[in-house]
Length: 282
Image 1: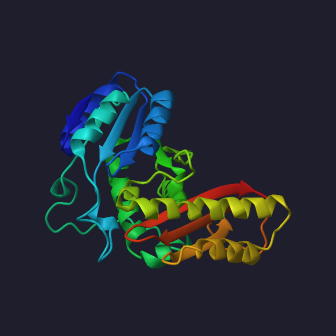
Image 2: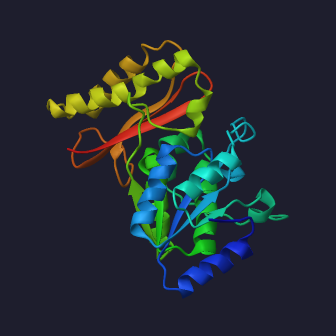
Image 3: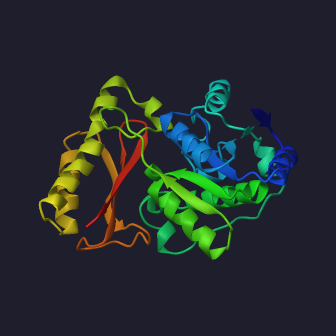
């Protein structure tokens, strides 16, 4: 595995791979890798010939008072995990490499898709996401890019950006990876204390409750959301950011469940704000 830190070095390596007629796959990450990230690399290895993983904690997607400075980092461990996963190139640029002096060019996906769910409480987040992802797409020019479904809104926003800006890239969403007890894997899980880790299971439990109600015939979105919130609030310090049921591709809110549905939530438990979701055809 090659480790590169500059755009020019990465382009040179990718150019060589493309000259050899290799199909290039990209896995963008912010590092502190876990099994969820590794599942993306496995999918990339299976579906492409040459896998590029980016490891970059992107400052433009963090708002004021968020955890940019304290976001967990462990480059040495991440590099070993990538090499063991069969990654061909690990791209680890500095902030200056990605955003030079007086940087002022951004890609902003406007409309309701970035204003709901996480976008409601993190108004600059998706502008930062689409900007850095579009930069990575331009640098790497992959045939396929792999993203985790845990960040379902991010996937929907990137898919919209790719369509509307005519990127010749296939976006490959990959399933959520969970712990054995159901907790969705997240780099921010490391912030949880032992007791908070146990309490965090209420998130996946609320999603399972929604699924049970839907299978039993419930189609009223508000009633399902109320039941989910009531369960989450049994953890007295849980702070609900949102519990929503939306159309999976447009993220438009629904009153009656029908078709491709996304049930998504964001809840602050102690220090971390955790997200999770399930996608169901109703």
